[in-house]
Image 1 (cartoon, rainbow, N blue to C red):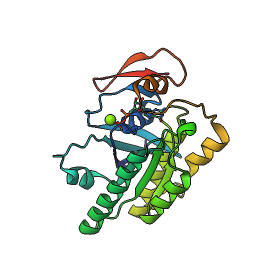
Image 2 (image 1 turned 90 degrees about the vertical axis):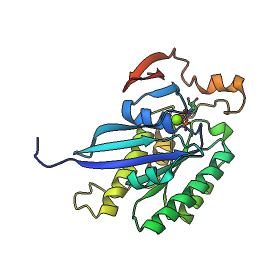
Image 3 (image 1 turned 180 degrees about the vertical axis):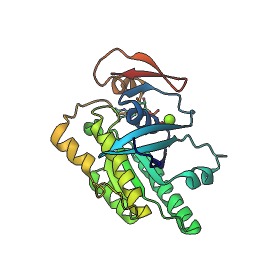
Image 4 (image 1 turned 45 degrees about the horizontal axis):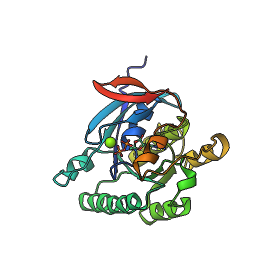
Length: 235
Ligand code: GDP
Ligand code: MG
C-alpha cells in the first residue's frame, strides 16, 4: 500500500423530498436499491472507492432540508453538489432549479469553485417521464453544470458513472495532476441506452401506484442495516 494520503471527496445531495437522494446514496454505498427509507434522516456516509486504479475516499451527505435548515452548512462542506430531481415529477424539477440558483449564488458570493451536477433520477420510469433529457441538459447548461440521468432502481453502473463523473470533475476543479480521465459527460445516459432495459412502472402519485414503484423486480425485500439505520432492500 502506498504511503500517500487518500484524496477525499465530499458530495452533497440536494433536491425535493422523494426524488431518490437516499436511494442513490445507499445504491452507491452498497450497490443495492432501498425500498423504504425514513425521509427525515440526514447523514454523511463514507465509502473507499477505487476509481480507475486510484483509491479514494468519498463522503456523501444525504440531506433532508427543513425550512429552518442552515443551508450554508451543506454548501460549505461540499466539494461538489448533486442536485436531484425525479424525471416523473415536474415539481421536483422546479425545486432543482431553485437549488441551482441558491448553490450558484452561494458559489458566487463566497468565490468557491466547485462542480454542480443536475441529476434526473428514476429513469427506469420512462413511461411516466415528464421531463425530457433535453430539458434537463438545457437547465444544467444555463448554470454551467454537468448533467446525468440515472436510476437507483436498476443496474449499479449508471449510479457509479454519475458519482464518478462528479469525482473526475472535482479533480479537474482542484487542478489535480492525478486526474484519471476526463469527466464522462452523459455517460450514464449512454449506459442506459446500451445496457439497460426499461421496465414500465407506475408513477409516484397515488398510494396504489407506490407499491408497484417499490417493487421493480418483484423480489421479496429483506431487512438491512447500514451504520445502524434500517433499510428494506432488493438484492
Ligand atoms: P429522498 O426523499 O429524496 O431521499 O427519496 P428516497 O430515496 O427516500 O426515495 C423516495 C421513493 O422513491 C422511495 O419509495 C424509493 O423507493 C423511490 N425511488 C428512489 N429512487 C428511485 C428510482 O430510481 N426508481 C424508482 N422507480 N423508484 C425510486
Ligand atoms: Mg431521503
